[in-house]
Amino acid sequence: MNKSDRISTDVASCRAERPLLRVNGRAYAWPKHPAVVICFDGCDPAYIESAGAAGAIPAIDRMRREGFSSSALAAMPTFTNPNNVSIVCGVPPAVHGVSGNFYLDRDTGAEIMMVDATPVRAPTILAAFSQAGAKVAAITAKDKLRRALGHGLDGIAFSAEKADDATDAENGISAIGALVGRGAPDQYSADLSLFVLDAGIRLLEARRPDLIYLSLSDYVQHKHGPEAPEAIAFMRAVDQRVARLVALGACLGIVADHGMNDMAHPSGEPNVVYLGDLLDAAFGAGATRVICPITDPFVRHHGALGGFVRVHLQRTGISRASVLEFIRQLPGVCMAAPREEACLRFELPEDREGDIAVVARSGVALGAHARDHDISRLAGERLRSHGGLAEQVVPFILSHPLRAGVALGRAGQPLRNYDVFSALLNDVEV
Image (cartoon, rainbow, N blue to C red; front, side):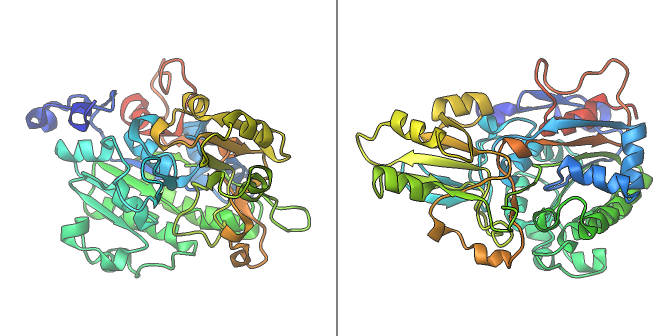
């Protein structure tokens, strides 16, 4: 199916009749009120529970009581790029093609970091609505995501990271500092996320878009556990902005791209299985190649260590069965699956999957070679990261209740974080 086949609508009559818009095989109603989706990066359900117990999130708690609140599953692997793209496309990685922040091109052998929309194979809901005449805005913490999520979007798309550089030609808006009341924040700060929310509020006040997507950063969650004072303070600051969005008449959905787990020993040392070193010792140097798809330009707070890696067999004649058996017996490994099984189970694109997909146990990080990971940049803090099945459960919270008799998600499937646009546009009572 070509991209052009995945979007269908009568553009000329869209404003007048508001027909259903079909994107990637799913139907979406035209928004009756501004629809705002927040991808709360790294927001494990434990952060909601701890902040709620501390009385720090009255607006979110009100949404949970009076709107809709449940848990959903994130796309695997539980990394930022696959899940943000899944959310804005409404489908899993097998359809849109993005299965990591970093991958190995099987044809060329080149390691590729996702920094733009090149790997994205499907149109986004945001682009489809903008092309049909809706006013759409996408604001991301990180510019790498802005480039991907803004692909094909005829509207506003900018990042907090590069807010000071935004132009009308490139981003559909300029002078963001004047709009928000401050310049671009430090990329390693809680304010990176708060800036995204503040910008969304200002746009809703000034321009009232039909659709807004706000993608935050998981800087705080990588540094602080759910009960830490810093995490509670951050949740309180987010909640204040959620309250303002709802007060402005937004139909609001909050999901996360992944959870977050402590991956350190009681002593504080990172609990890491360096799979590349172990495979070299067992099968010889260069026989295999371990790819860590968590790798992105923001590695300081996780050292490119997470709960999921891919193993590519590099030497002719090496037995995949023997490598699988070796990996499966390693302490700290939850599962190791051949490419075909992993793609079927996790709905992944086969051409971007390794020969073997490896998932860590909860509390364990997987790496390539020890020399590949600079954990000194953690500055003595505990390693907190994501990527595996242990980080797949995320919050799914809506500001409005569901219409009577509505069942969310795809028929016969568990609720997923990428069902949020369908829920907001099709299923809530507004």
